[in-house]
Image (cartoon, rainbow, N blue to C red; front, side, top):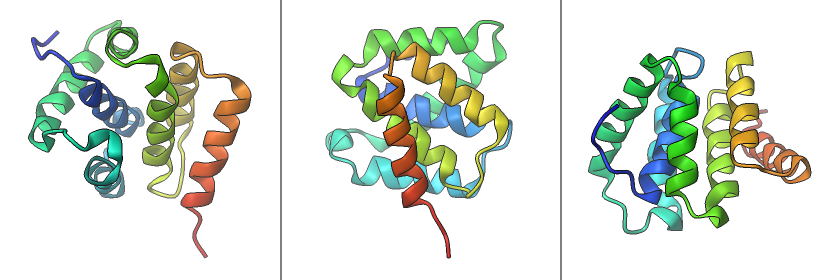
Amino acid sequence: MTDLALSPEDALVAVMVAVSVSDEAIRTSELLKIEQIVNHLPVFGAYDADRTQAVAETVFTLFEEEDGLDALFGLMRATLPERLFETAYAIACDVAAADGAIEQTELRFLEELRDALEIDRLHAAAIERGARARHMTL
């Protein structure tokens, strides 16, 4: 594992990168969505966006390890205040929906994230519905 100490904002970036790579293909639309979220959401108001690359490398390193996903979820639970758990899930859903299609591996990742962060199923369904509504096309 890397020596990067994660801030709460880093943990949010990590979850977005993780959902993007969960289908083994990082799409431009997903990268643009991550950049948009970091640049516009209030939770990232004081965040140094230059840290994004180092956080992404941490996620890549974790995904190479056998229990890397569990380690990532453990880091998130340890780093994020509980009040940001739903925020983490919401931005993960937005990144997953950014390319217009959510792959089975992304759905599995979101399910595991929901469980790891103990997001209530009703709240998760509302968050997922909102992400779907925001990313509809004509």
